[in-house]
Amino acid sequence: MSSKTFDEDHIANKLSLFFDRYKSKIITFPKEKGWMTDELYMYQGFWFQSARMFSIMTVMAAQDDFKPHPSDIYLATQPKCGTTWLKSLVFAIVNRNRYQNENHPLLSTNPHKLVPNIETEVVEKIPTYAEGHSPRLFFTHLPCISLPPSILDFGCRIVYMCRDPKDVLVSLFHFANKLRGTSTGPMTVEEAFEKFTKGITPHGPYWEHVKGYRKASLENPSKILFLTYENMKSDTENNVKNLADFLGYPFTEEENSRGVMEEIVSLCSFEKLSAANKHGDLGRGLPNSAFFRQGNVGDSINYLTPEMIQILDDITNKEFHGLDISF
Ligand code: A3P
Image (cartoon, rainbow, N blue to C red; front, side, top):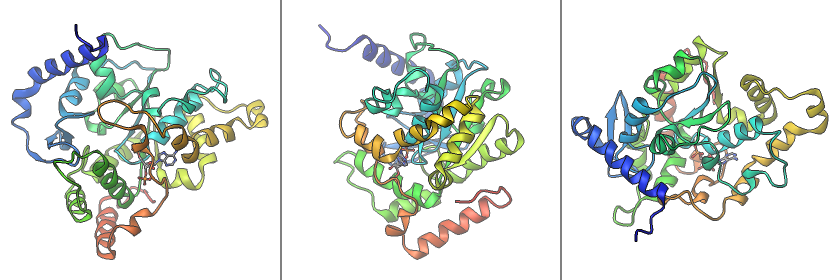
């Protein structure tokens, strides 16, 4: 008798179905050596992983199979821009009347399990994926241009968070080295820097991804909120207040007098979440603890040379010129 669960069987069947559906297209895409997977494939101007979560197959399947609702809320980032933090904050804001602090799901469950990714578990579980209550809260690493079109056509609310590319590069370098198999061996900082500056990262080029959402948010600020990790770190409380207003869940006077917003900030702090995620895993070789390293701004200075920093800053200044993005 098989020891696999119904879900595991269902997902395995779905993945093989996606493989059959898309393989003839995928083999025609440009490819490069990956950070955590054998390959990255270029699709619609961006690089996607050959396997693991957010693979090229499930990205294409999400575009074909996922059905957005107008009331959905989407969170979007590139890896290592503060996804885990953003998921926890938005989950806590939207669900604050459902859970008490002492038995809050964030104290026992990884934020990645609480806010599902459309291009991984959601698309893999269609049609058995539980619809949940409204608004549905989803996450994606998809670039703006690759979102299922109805997300933008319906005017769904989207929260995008980006981060200083120097810190993203260093965070991704550490993350990749934690997850790379022993046969591949660790990456060097030099290798990571070269790939990153060429735009070859999962869901990259980094700058193109940010620009897509930034331009969309400037055109439609009431539907697309653009945040930076650095600003969220330096003024978490004001950002959380703005986030709640944008999502349609503003804090009431009565909640303000009870300090509800401050409780959410504390619940989602690096210290609280990293302590709650010391053990356990998300499956697929992803330990919960891998999403918590330092949670600081500016750690890249400890890994990149002054020349590397200058090159990255020059690219960023050129690419983001006129877009009012600062870190
Ligand atoms: P560092 O590697 O620089 O420490 P993502 O969630 O997109 O994978 O990003 C991971 C980065 O966010 C890591 O950065 C991690 O430490 C940091 N992080 C995780 N939880 C956080 C939190 N609650 N507050 C601030 N930063 C957090």
